[in-house]
Length: 133
Image: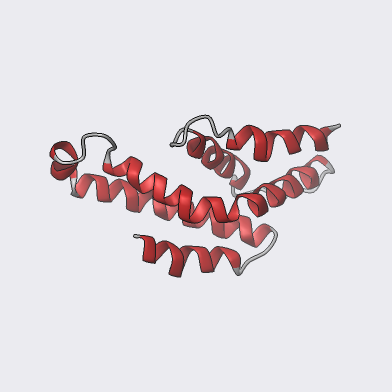
């Protein structure tokens, strides 16, 4: 899984900029969510009997967070803020609902260990409120 993250997902995201970066990130996170769900269903027996502390789906999300999300969260927040500001100025740019999908990813990543990282609050919400002034 780590090899797939590093070779396919990260290189695809980092090769894009602006709205295309956001589009690529939402596609990658959606594909990952589907893959992670199917991994946990496919290996549900092992998940029930071998992984007592952390379920397989949570392990996959943690890998997503540490390998992929941590590497792109700063640029992701910047692109999200640019898109939000352009929509505030009357330009319709989020026809694909990418803003809400990416904000949901920030919130999901906050739920994973280490606890109380406040990714959403520190890396996104604070800048959003600052830009709104």
